[in-house]
Length: 268
Image 1 (cartoon, rainbow, N blue to C red):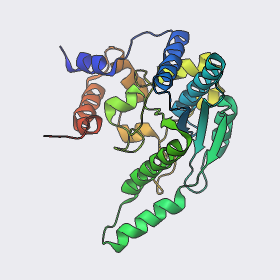
Image 2 (cartoon, rainbow, N blue to C red; image 1 turned 60 degrees about the horizontal axis):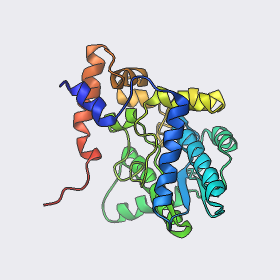
Image 3 (cartoon, rainbow, N blue to C red; image 1 turned 120 degrees about the horizontal axis):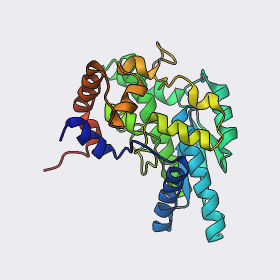
Image 4 (cartoon, one colour; image 1 turned 135 degrees about the vertical axis):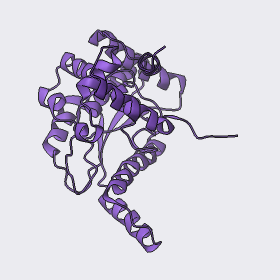
């Protein structure tokens, strides 16, 4: 078995999907988890204004609405968490995302002071962090916020990571990947767009240039400039298609280099 085939099997990516079927699978997945854990009543997700959180947020809202109807229990809720670092560059997109999702509740927490205080505390201890490391601090702070809210609201934290990010390790370890459940992990980037198009999402939210937007010195830095390969190439690779050798080697190098990020803590 080639490494490409091994990765495809591990990531569970299909070469062809039907959006309506995948949406139903995602929604049922979320509903089943909550129903199997009767004490949990809410889905918690950070909304950034990008494709992935917009899609996952809409799936969460559909799941919560269906659960309320099917169980006659109004406690089932989807909570959209806005967590900008100061002023967000794509604030209008965030508002459009929220308007599309129509969450049951919106909670706004600005993480800037918390991140700056953490940076200051490290500096006092003699640890100077780079702008890149500070970006990871932002991601972990956002996850900390979501888990605090989940503890209060009897909820689970939902992830929005997809297969194209997972295969390349393009996430913060114990940051945006540290979630309870991830309904879109088996989808690649273009498949996520297909689901949003089917759900009649405003096109600019899924056609925008993907960015993690974590670095102060490089705001809105495109993901693809960091990855060194395009999402279209990653998606083709995950769908079993042939891509140029340089891109294939880059994807497989990223996969092997970031294996530790996809593993559980090592124990004896």
